[in-house]
Length: 127
Image (tube, rainbow, N blue to C red; front, side, top):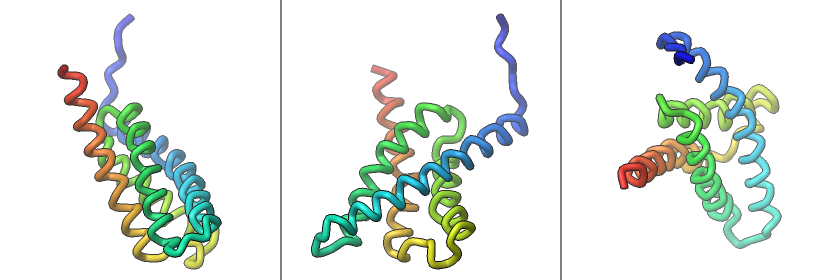
């Protein structure tokens, strides 16, 4: 059986659709993490939510790099923007967005985690 070669536009459409679905799921998980951080009743719920978010981004980065062999870092930027900006804004309006420090921290940590996890996987595959 021969492997079907996909053109760049086909790959881009396929990945964009998959990233959009994953972005919606990502939004659901992040909003649950924020609620969990608030429920801990810690002295610093914003820092707790950021730590939870970065931990979750490591797991999300593993999945992104596992299933996206072409553009995992670009995909993580797209997923983060869809999940943290577009979906909450469309569902709840401006009040659905996270606070700016939390939004920036989680949004920038996803591509960073994807890049680092990708490097780790590349190094492990060479050994």
